Length: 362
Image (cartoon, rainbow, N blue to C red; front, side):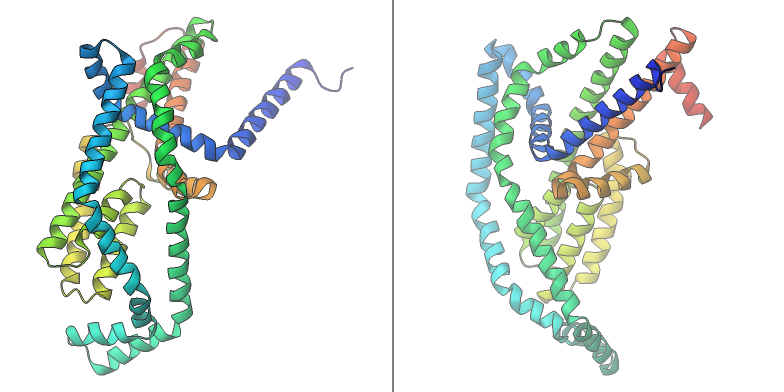
C-alpha cells in the first residue's frame, strides 16, 4: 500500500509549485515593481496612442509621437515651475536644522502659545513636554529623512518604466492572446478572458483616476496656501499632489507635512489650514473619488488597510502604492473564480444574475 496516493501527491505538488512561485515573486519584487509601473504607464497613455494611431496608421509611430508630446509637456512644466520648486526645497532644507531645534528646545511652544494667548503655565508645560521627548522627535525626523532618501533611490524607475511601457503598448494585445492559447477548455477560457477584461478595465480606470485626483489635490493645496500667504507654496502643493498617489497613508502624510511646515515657519492661519485639510479630505474621499473611480475599485476598508500594510512591508513606499490595485486584482480573480465554480456545478448561467443574487444576499 502506497504511503501517499495520487491525489495527495498532486495536491502537494501544486502547493509546492505555488510556494515556489510566491518565493520567486518575493525575491524578484524590485524587478516586478518596475514591470507593474510600466503596465500602469501603458494604461495611462494607451487611449492617446490609440487615437493617434487612427491618423498615423502605425502603432510604433503613434507611440513615438505621444512620448515626444509627453517629454515636451514635462520639459515645459519643469522649465517654468521646476526652478521655483527646487529653490523652495533648498531654502527649506537649509533652514530645517534650525526649525527642528526650535521644536526640540520647546521654543515653538512658547511662540505658538503667545500668538494664541495661552497662559505662561500652559506654555511652560508644552515646552517641557517637547524637551522631554527631544530624542524621540529627532529620531522621528531622522526616520522621515530615511524614507525620503529611500523613495529617491527609486528614481531609476523614471527611465526604465517608459522603456518597458513602450513594449506593452506595442505588443500588449498579443500577450493576452498567448496567455489564452494555453487554455483549451471553454469554461477555463471564459474565466481567463473575464479576469483579463475586468483587470484591463480596473487598471485603466484606476490610473486615470489617480492622475485626476493628484492634479486636483495639487491645485487645491497650491491655491489655498497661496491665498492664505503660506511659505513654500509650490513645494508643499507638489508634495501633497504626489502623495495623493499613495493610498490611505499619502493624504495623511501630506496633511501632516503641510501643518508641520506651517507651524514651524510661523504661519498664523494653521487652524484654518487644518479645517481646509479635513474638508478637502472628506470631499475627495466621499464625493470626488467615488465618482471618478467608479465601482471597479470597491474594496472593504479592512482589505485596503491590510494591502497597504503588507505592501509597505514587502516593497516600502512603492509597495504601498501598488497595494490597492493588487488587492483589487485579487478581488477580481476571486469573483470570477466563484462564477467559474458555479458554472461547473450548475451549468451555464448569466453572470449578471449571479452577481445580482450574491449582492442581494449581502
